[in-house]
Image (tube, rainbow over all chains, first blue to last red; front, top):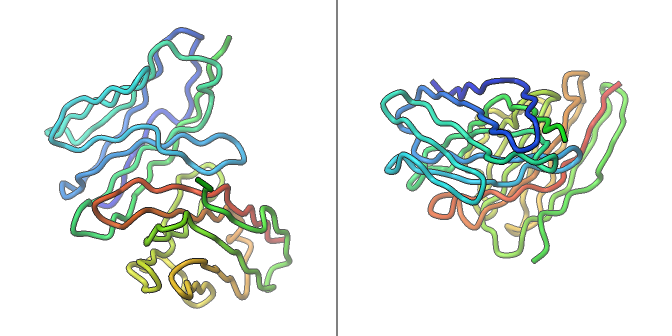
Length: 114
Length: 115
């Protein structure tokens, strides 16, 4: 119940294309869903996050779509660029009133080809 | 604003030896986290501090791992004795607090190789 399952494990996209990464969770108590971006040799950095009271959140080229009934959420990267090549992690946590402990997915390695 | 600092960046030790990692969080951040990231996997929380108190250490192998956060600022994570399976990147993160402000800021990590 504490797991967050992420797919695909790896993804290759052409420059300008759309990258889509999916995550699924079981624990309905989760109420905060961030996506982190990690470059080699660096720590993860928050990219975008959503709470379950909205179905979509967009920041620039990055969009989170959230389906509460299906317990799924996804990251869409529009107009993918070679600089987006990195590993992406979805995560989930129980928010206010709790410890904020993040449960991470397994990660998706994205390669954007020029 | 300075980010989360960690040292050393790399460490190679023999199994059964001991090792310690240091973390300095972002100034003013009350909550500090230590994560273990095994190659090809997502980070896994080992221990979470709120100021200098432990909030969650349910996944910390307490027979060999220990951590402290004296004075509610810097923190050290120790492994004694190390095992081969401890080879991983150890990430430190901090957040303003553990509830309302959820953004966790990660340091660059310490890459540990146990031979």
